[in-house]
Length: 153
Image (cartoon, rainbow, N blue to C red):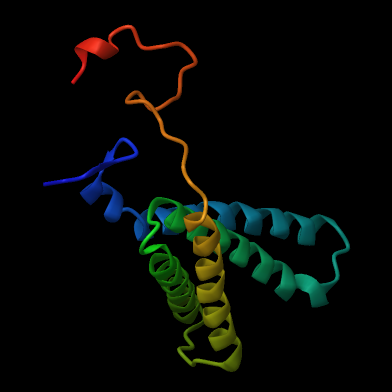
């Protein structure tokens, strides 16, 4: 029998995580990269800080993804956050290897993968420690009482 927690069924809640967290990571990283590209194009941004800016944009997306994975999966949040970081970094590695036709695993790519996994884990630890606010069935919390509450089961 499925157990009901926070307005969601237990099975649906346990399965939530990696795909939604990856979408969150890309939804944060891609706009950040476009903003960085605009800054590099239209300003006198030093070239030596470009790598750090890309790393910051990537890790902020992974941190948010890990946070989301930990927020919805308290028990498995750290594992799902780490897996999210690993899958995200492997996707980026494969895409860059296909584009540049170079599948060599360098020290820089290993550091990026490990840093991505750690960012996902740290984000998930913070997300698992925070409790979600309960929502009503309609998806938002109303300040007025539900007049049909006594008729709903």
